[in-house]
Image (cartoon, rainbow, N blue to C red; front, side, top):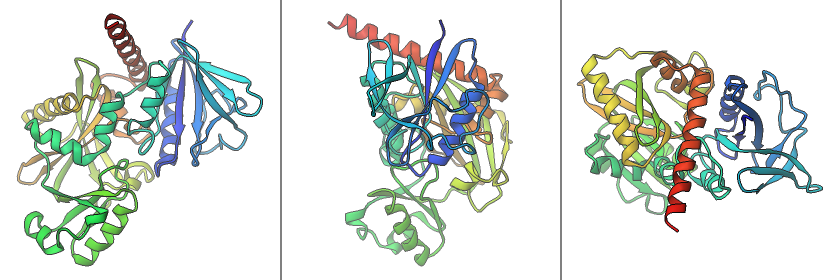
Amino acid sequence: MNKKVAIIFGGKSAEHEVSLKSASNVFNATDREKFTPLLLGVDKSGKWCYNDKYPTDRMDLARDDYFAEATHVYLSATGNSVNVISRNGNKTMTSFDAAFPIIHGTFGEDGTLQGILKSMNIPFVGPDVLGSAIAMDKDVTKRLLKSAGIPVAKSYTLYKHLSGEYSFREIVSELGLPMFIKPANAGSSVGVSKVTDEPEYHAALTTAFHFDNKILVEEAVIGKELECGVLGNERPQASVVGEIMATEEFYSYDAKYIHSDGAVLQVPAQIDAPMTDTIRNLAVKACQTIGCEGMARVDFLLSRENKLVLNEINTLPGFTEISMYPKVWEATGITETDLITTLISLAVQRHERDAALLTEGR
């Protein structure tokens, strides 16, 4: 019997709508001969929901409201599976054997959801708790990458209660202009601003502190935006490298996920073979440095002076129709359906490996 896989989507973060698009693509592309996918939503207030009347053929969560007629539920582990139980009547509505979390950003990509799933003793796609938590914190990630000899952009870390610790003039003397300001813990491109003068600097601080109490002020590395997919557990592999050609001022949240014309994705990237090899090797090394297994999209910046820095690691990258992660793997020779199958298989393998360790340690 094939495994029932819960595609967990939605969530409380600013990336709720993007998650709807990613979940739709994952559901539609799942191999039905190997897996039975089911949709399990988390609404914007954080309540778990299940809609047993929602269409199970090809669908679009962004178009058809899943939550309108959904039942509020809770999850109960039952050994090798998880029951989905209605809060009104305690009726078991369905169950699943593995999970594909595709909640981007806070509460879905930061180790919180991974901890819930791990405590229920079921396989789940993507990195484990620690790798997810580290990658979400861009400040901690940069510190670990620097210690491993992986190049990162120069930056300042600012805390809300110490936001005046450095003056605008001090920061500019070190980083120059323009610069970028971003929350340390937020999803892809959320709350990011490009700064060219002091009024923009203070406005950007306000925006970033809206999403997090810790933010990064980074030097601007102007040039190519390059992305590489990583896939695997103990022996991860890197995809071909893709290039983002943003039609907006920078590759913003809207350009990534909302506007199909916000950027042009060039796969493979227009870079030479030695640089391609360097990026692929660094992408794998970065994931191993922070303990990231399963999957990740590793983003780089290559300046006009050929300076390469690792920008960030995304542990639950977008799976929308305009997302880079499935596109670079398709260019590497893995279709979206086969990619999803591989990710679920990797989740099961890691779960079995970790379970065996627990047994041996008793």
